[in-house]
Image 1 (cartoon, rainbow, N blue to C red):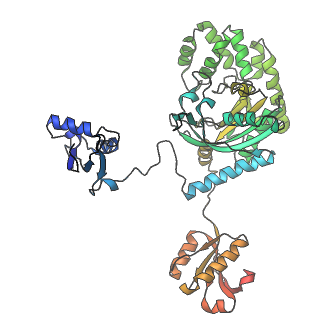
Image 2: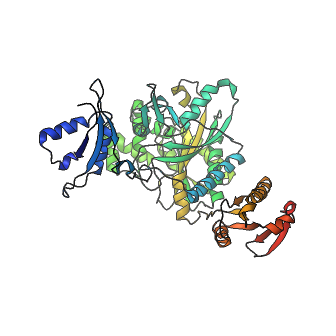
Image 3: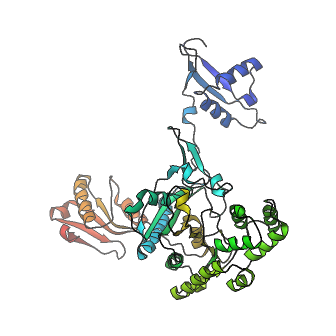
Length: 501
């Protein structure tokens, strides 16, 4: 390419009118690393082929001494001001003020319940090592990672869940933390998955975990924490229930059906799809692993049982049932027995669960699982640590908000301000700042009008932000060490000394 710059008109290849040789040369020119972005821009801007309209981008090309890549600067032809898509990426959300108030309110409830149960808050990086989340082949979550190689050549991922990060931190702390550990966290998680109602590609999740307790008392306490939250939000046992089972039930059932133990993870993943897939598809999926159809049908019969008494009649290994009996007994003493029910098909999809598992569901059946959790006594060793007894749950923000909307329980949370401060004369703006500062030091939420406005606008603004009082700074009142205070609910007004505000 000759030195200097030349203006070229690039026509979208789909409707290109150039001779084929020139078209190929232009395509090659725009295939360099620095020019691909513009090429993509032209492609994305191209109208349908039926319209045959030309998309023209005028560019400057400057050659280098090595005859290499060309540097392009867009002329002032409108492309540099081309509008971007103002929507967030698919599956993600913005939180404008009205949505942020709901999120903050929900998180406040998460933290309040955690405080009532004496749990301490922790947090971890959103970006973690990819290896932390890659466990068993076929586990759905490993196929949903937002993962990439960073500039240092390390494989990293946006966390899809919080429990592995918790386990990593516990291993890191080692003997520096005493048992039992009771920690909670509220963090954002990312999964590239199919979106449905209450399911997005990012969500915030509340986790509570107990580390160092072997007894089922830990699971009973965690379920009660969730019940406490539901009650706090106005949700009752007629709205929501818990399905409870144990991974040990599935292990015993597989052993009774002579199904190889090495298929346990595969069977768990398939059983977890019951209710999401047709039963004949479930049968085919299990049979494809080499399990005889007779064993498949026996196994599916066992996991279809809905009472512990029925399970006792068909399961020869009773060890798994003992823990379930203990849990239901504790639930009765806690006072939430009416919230829980046995369902042998509940296994949860994550590979690290080892014992009791549970998930909360809406009784109308309109939503996916609200939350879920269970025991994971062997997770730490998979990350190179020494195993500790552990259990916990994850509770996402998306499904619960949908449920609260469905039940009419989502609160109206308008912006509320204590005082709005306005200087009637622009020369008194500094005095208005003094008043606002004094009120804020006393804990008042104050909106200081920062520009010259008419009093009519101030009254409308005060109504819009639900201010309780309007404080006017006037010349004559200020000289007397006072301000004019108007109570916006009663419409009463009076002069008040600064110290009495």
